[in-house]
Length: 357
Image (tube, rainbow, N blue to C red; front, side, top):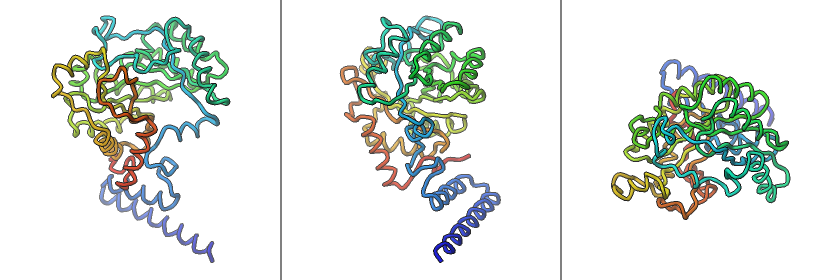
């Protein structure tokens, strides 16, 4: 009897799914379609479209499924600069940038790539015995060099037996066909992620923070990496001067139209020894620095509009307290994630609830 009832329930759900498809075809209302399909999936499987019951498509769950063991990024400083620092496209770098805010102590130019990899692995080995690593070329623009130099540096990192791939942080305007072809071939052997500093979808903002590239260049880099089967990640800053809440939510819609694999969100922070620090001291009224609660609600509104296929790596960035001017929330990443998940549940919402195809 139980099996009979179960089969009937499955049959009813299947019919309901067909009704939704018919309703969508007749009404062309993508928002209603997405909402109903999510509810059906939850009824049938107890999960969302990304295959689990967390209310957003989170990176840790994805990575655990991709690799059979714990994988950790090891940061590397390979001595790169940026075209908006060396005079090619400008000087002074990005208005918000102080690379010291995210560089580990083992990560410095006095150590070779091999040495930095070994020191990073030794650091994490104290916590976890069984682990593999991704060499994370993080500081400045890590594709801003001749292709032969890049191959040498990347492949030196991959020589370590515990390194199973690369994460390469760079600018959209420092991606070119020869590099893409090389990374596409490398992706067939090891995990490769190209992390693109997009930061904003508005060219006026990109100009004001001295990025030196346009959003069109970012869209091209995202499309070209995806076209070649290279994992990509878009890095966005929420709260840059002059951007309204409506524009930030429009950013979620814009990003959702591109073949973005992973997304990193980052609240605006004012770091010491940056141009942004000077601007903040002179014109604090031009900045809208969110409280933690305000930012949580912004993130959730952003998630609702975001393509559910995009994997979300993080919501915030943490800078060393001695380098941070504002905002000072006193929250670690895992604490912030817990607050986001609690608020998602309170609002009974999820990533992609309002996504329009």
